[in-house]
Figure 1 (cartoon, one colour):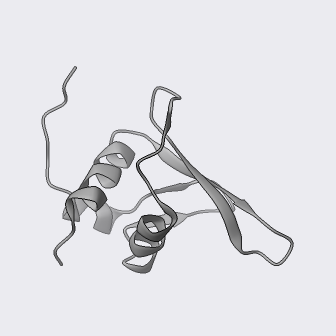
Figure 2: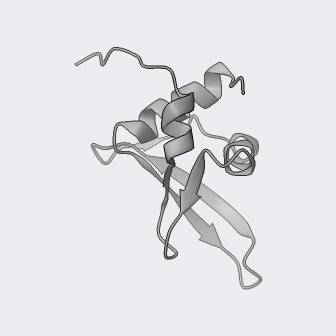
Length: 85
């Protein structure tokens, strides 16, 4: 499975400890989602379409109604990058 650069960026951020918070309406549809880095900063690089693609490919998942995090499959798909710290 080939993933785009934008998907790689999001997966790398999630692999470092970030997560995606979602807000749902009464019917259970996602109306808003926010990506949070491991440092607690909000990151605006994950659009609704990109979120849906990652979810469809099962690279991210939510457990027990918690935030979305990277899956084992997502960890295998993301290419390793050097940390700029």
